Image 1 (cartoon, rainbow, N blue to C red):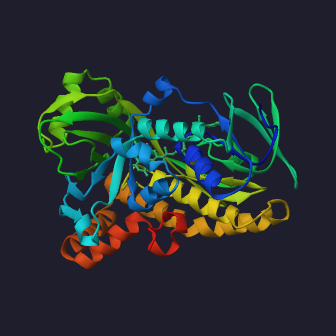
Image 2: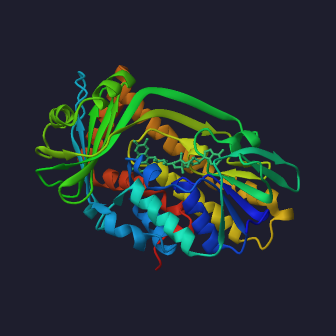
Image 3: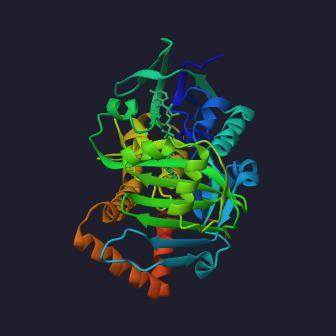
Length: 404
Ligand SMILES: Cc1cc2nc3c(=O)[nH]c(=O)nc-3n(C[C@H](O)[C@H](O)[C@H](O)COP(=O)(O)OP(=O)(O)OC[C@H]3O[C@@H](n4cnc5c(N)ncnc54)[C@H](O)[C@@H]3O)c2cc1C
């Protein structure tokens, strides 16, 4: 039986929507309606990406009893290596980071998105607290001061007090909230796939910086890795259409054979790379999480980790109120304040790093090379950057901190 009214409606059943629903259900007593299609085996297989979850994200997933269903498919990332293969006059030095320098056994855990999403669906289906409204799409959202009306493609109408938009980069929640947005394209498409290889990866994630963007090789099981390879859209189209043997040969050559022979390849999917930032994270009783609120290129594994911080911050804020009604303005102000600097700083740094590869700009290349030389030489600087990559310790929500 579908509840036509709820306290909170979450729109979008991608990973961030599913995680937000799970965290909020654990943290609060609010009645939750979750809107979107239920992914099946076929749709799950279409996402060939993996996600490197930083340690604070893993803590959140553990606290919400999601990690126990994921960890059998996850692999630790203990070391990170950056190699300059841009071929420009100003060559940056190779850089090596190890989690031991932060006294951690691993920076992150890498898991295929299909396994993550499956674990999330199982978790939601096994609990009574989330009412999943299966719909092809939400087609209309109308808000007044006291109510939000949600219409689905199947012409059903639902009402809610507060709406969370987890509906990705083309979010209709963001449009309904009238949130000003800046969007841009990079001349890049990333090919993502998993493959097996003859040499061990030794829990090392390797970023090879090329002039079309990074090629990243991220550990899965010992002789299996995932690939995220940023190319120009034309090059990506050509390379993605190569047969397995040809693709393996190109991958072997461009990765400088650091993982040995490519012994088998899994399906490849191309993802166009774009950027997006919003002026506000909540307005008109609609809050945004995940890619509805920020889109950044896949450098340094930051996108989904930001989405989890959105979910955790918003859930903690909502938890601190026993009712929504009169408190909605305060809730939105708190959420806007909690996300502003974290999202802005990541968007800026990732954009600059990406541009320093793509643009033939001498000053950007000099800054990058000088920065990487300093990182290579100074342990304290490396420790600071590694800590920042995990998430600013001081502003992390409680749900993402280890219990002491
Ligand atoms: C190649 C690549 C590699 C990446 N690797 C990493 C990594 O290692 N670490 C990391 O942190 N991040 C990584 N990212 C980023 C990460 O993948 C994204 O941040 C994440 O997938 C965003 O999830 P989301 O749920 O916000 O959006 P989406 O996955 O886009 O989900 C949105 C959902 O909303 C649904 N929807 C849309 N409109 C409607 C509607 N009107 N009604 C109902 N439902 C709707 C869609 O069907 C979809 O299911 C990577 C990105 C790329 C491109």
